[in-house]
Image (cartoon, rainbow, N blue to C red):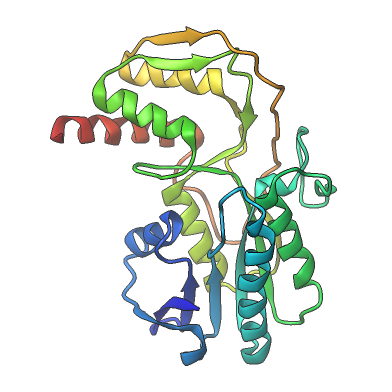
Amino acid sequence: MKVLFIPETRTAITGYTGYVGRSIVKFGSLQGIESFLSDQVASHVIHLAAHIEEDSNAVVENQKIDQEVYDYCELHKAHLTYASGNNVYPFTLDCDINSPLDLDTSSNYAKSKIQGETLLKSYTFPRAILRIADVFGLNQRHGALFQAIQEAVVLHHPLKLFGSGSKTRNYIYIEDLVQYILHCSSISAEGIFNVCYSDPQSTVAIMSSVVSFTQLQIDHIPKEVVENIRTMIATPLEGFNYKYNFNKSLELFCLLSKEKGTQE
């Protein structure tokens, strides 16, 4: 497996070419060496790599990826920071780290993360499991909502709100997520952590805030939408405070999207 190895901290980062991985290198100002995991002796591993497509291969492929990383950490007694997700929880309110996981989920990606967390129980190395909220940031390739918002702001087009906009999630801005991950690894934190801002947001509330920041209009498009609410209770991390809250990070996101629009 290819990793980015940071000699200064002896940290190996899997999935470093993905959105979160590239952002860690950018916001963390990291200087690393591209290498195979087996060629380095790391004291810390930040495990971001995953097959994210919603197909039948996700569970099998992610098991292979996780197994390789876990075996490496067990051999070297390295601390692991494992990127899980909020979709391990069922659709309900106020999930905390002790809430039951959604073992009946239809999402193959969620199944693979539940499997990854379960597999960890058979290992002894120190680890932190990060159940990460919906991530947003400029130029992300996932997350249709914020991709659509960025496009509307850049092109100065109306926002499109499908149905009632009742979908509700906790969110985390990419810069804050990066700093959370790096701090978690640096202090060798152990346990399970819900990584999110404390205030859940519905799609319609997000759109209303974007309007206040950008003066764009909203086009309401009728659509039957299945009730889609999943919220988490944020877990504190020793010695860490978020730089932003949701509202401030959304304002920054809109400002950066505007700037991108003036440059194109």
